[in-house]
Length: 347
Image 1 (cartoon, rainbow, N blue to C red):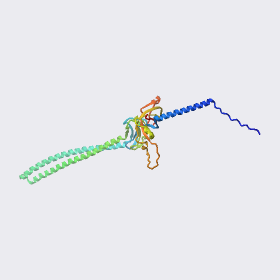
Image 2 (cartoon, rainbow, N blue to C red; image 1 turned 60 degrees about the horizontal axis):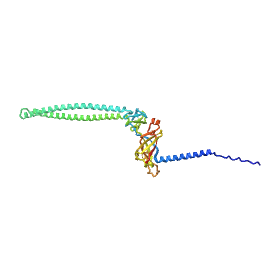
Image 3 (tube, rainbow, N blue to C red; image 1 turned 45 degrees about the horizontal axis):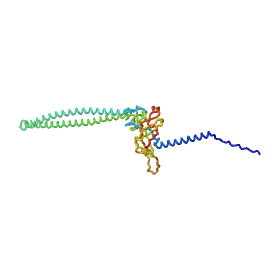
Image 4 (cartoon, rainbow, N blue to C red; image 1 turned 120 degrees about the horizontal axis):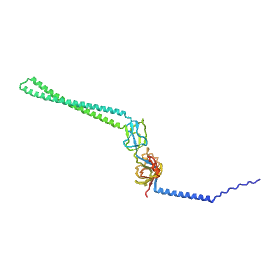
């Protein structure tokens, strides 16, 4: 029986050159790890870091005060607007018609006032005539009474003079009452005219609500409606970023909050401009955790409780920027940009 020979296993030899490369790589790796650990430790001791941050600004919801259909938009997203600049119009034909009706009612009341004043003047003149007639009949009556007592005129004539005097006195009282009535009519018409004028002014004020203007200078951040849409009073049509004032809002974990104070120096970077470093300081520290203003605030009354680290909002100003000149030249800061913030700890 023939013997089978087992092939010899190859012997792997490592050259001194390969061993040196491996050792060098290991040394470089260890040095890199040590340097990284030192930098991390230095950064941890010097800064409070957070990437839960973004640029923020004051935002105004532009909404009409009345319900109506949008007929025209004067601006679009990204447009800069000034205080008082028209933004959009609502359909106003119905209000214009009601104002014209109110103006017609006011003119009618003014005309009635003129008629009432004429009637008052006529009543006053009639009163003067009635007063003169009363004075004359009174004088005739008193003279006739003396003549009757002296036997100069018969009793029939005396009674006629007496009746004339009583009649003239009643005519004077009637004329006086007509003056009061005419004055009362004028007063009532004046009140109606004042009400009609107030209605006209109300219509003019309401008409102003059908063109909405910018309540502040800024930039149109978002358009929510188009011409033809019917919007309700208070429904947002535009969102306006007020002015050019921007800051960084950071939602900082409560475990890092003990080192935070107003005026603390910070620096941050934006994801959009990685070659730029911004500097600022804390100018606002929230009085409530962010969860307090959530759509569904946490409620632990049921007994099912899971402890979650809360976040407290702080605001950081934008004071200066350093870095790449090209990025700085073409930089455009937009509300909502993501940021990474480093807050200097007390030394």
